[in-house]
Length: 554
Image 1 (spheres, one colour):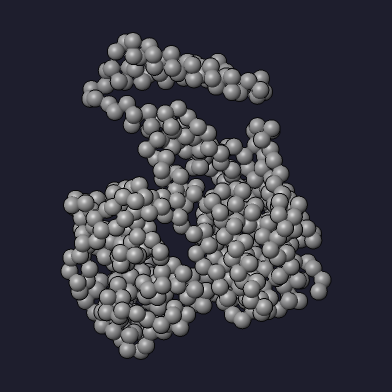
Image 2 (cartoon, helix red, strand yellow):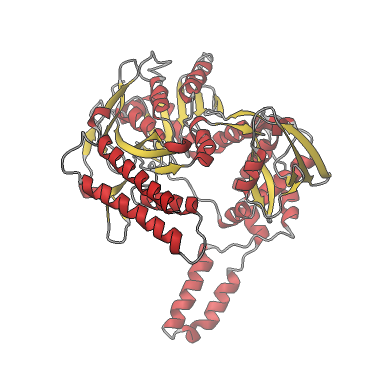
């Protein structure tokens, strides 16, 4: 055992020497002795814990915990990727994995299919959203997490997996699926939202994202009536840097700087320019963003804005201006490490949080407005750094009503769509699908024995008033008035359903259409009801206003 720990200690000293060599070109201020000393302390501490701790310790878990906690003190994006996690990481970067092509979730402590992907084994075998997975290869799914189930369903392409499911109205069914290489689309939907406006939904930035956007734009341009285009990056968490450059290149001329990166290793600083001829650099363009638009999405929206190529509409973006690189480690492990910050063409960095300077409690602060710097777009418009991309036109999305939120949270919209799909073999094309009055009445009947409690803003205000009055000893004097107000505010769920009928029906129609036409239908129908899309179309139909926002003359 002592020989083993001598080797471990020697191993860490070798690592230390390696680190000294790796950073030998750095400034002399780096305290190399501190690095070597602390690695030696770590090795001896690990030896003592392993030898003398009262219970047996799992060496792998202990080291993994130490590594994770160390990296977490830097920023959320610098991560250790073990050999066991390499497949999941590959999926994040490429969008590829071996499996059945379906999302799974939990409902009432059961694992259910939530969304099969069109054209893949789950859909080919007629697995449907709402199907409960009872067994996989004869093993019960009881007490399994969605992560466990996902691992059981994944495997080498060409291998088979047998699944026992339960479906409402049909009982238990056995399905045998042949796994395939699953490649999720970066562009799940492209189409016309009206006679003159094309729409491209960009959901991710994995491999070939640029090609998919280019192909989508080429497809749209086959329509001779095309006069404008909307690129939707809302909820897109980002991905590969080079794909964001390729996407911007679809809309800007060759040789234009799209983004630059700057980090500690000056030799790695780089300016990235568009390399190819664009598909179209002239059509009026809108980019839709929200708080879920991050990283590569912000490169695209920020670059389009800085180059005055299009108007950004929606909500302020997330504010992730950090670039990660993957470094190989021993034993097939990897380190995803933040190596630089990226800068849009105007020179601004949109990183919102400063991870390099932490407060006494370990928290990080956002960049204060007083420290934000002003930059100029190509035509001289003012833009600012330090906190995401600010839209040219802010369009605050209206919140759902409390009853609608409750229906979503309690999965009752999902459940009714499951019931509808199992009773109707087919429906008209998604863009033409409409629920009837009879359908909405059926939905309300479906809800009669379901639990979906909620509290309105008025009810909450009344409860807050009661607590405050009790604290101040005034409640007895107003108790009768309080009871009367409470009675007047008593919710009538049936009335609330009718009052919010329009938004509820829109959700139901989208969820039901997705059961027949999959993800494509979801985006197609969302575009029909979407307020950001409506604002974008209105602007694109008003060319003088569009050009004025961009600081251009007609």
